[in-house]
Image (cartoon, rainbow, N blue to C red; front, side, top):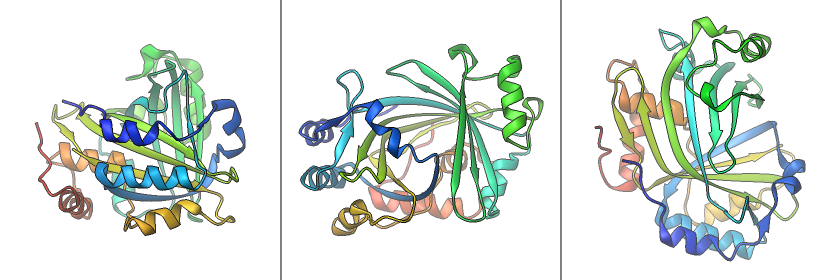
Length: 265
């Protein structure tokens, strides 16, 4: 079962001043450089306290600063997108649908990683009932073909992910920090499920030209960068037949960090 929200995190989040969704237009960073980190919920409370002291604001929607997200990742029968990431292809894609649970907004999202290290994300609204399949939607399938090298007929749902997200913005509005907690995965093809327990994935999104306050906060709290993909970790955990390679080492690192073995159900 998915984890419940940690009360200590909610307590640390409460005094952080809010920022409205409309104010964040300047830091959407759809063309960006991403840096990822993994830590624990215990350390996250210290990070949130330091972020508040540094003047960060937290995205608040309808009075809520921690939002629920559900995503479905699509791939080919042979898991081409998973294998492209495993094999370190510099140019690669991920295709998912995502519902922002608090608002109900649902999108088809296409993420493209370029050999420059930059990530571009494009998305288009879709009906909520198309979360696990959009092949019958002409507008969505046309959008997919325009912005990716895949057609809807090549893809099927592989994984669903559920998590709660905190989004922070620095005072200069030059970086956005997403913090994902209570991560839970379910594999459509194998039926297996897994939770990352109290592991937390932090993603710093910036244009690369500005100094990052958050990097200093993470360094202070001894949180080191770790390249990680929720999709690839989830597939490694829930599909014994996947040729996961180096991702198994990342799972071991996460288990060492949280000091427990991740349970597969």
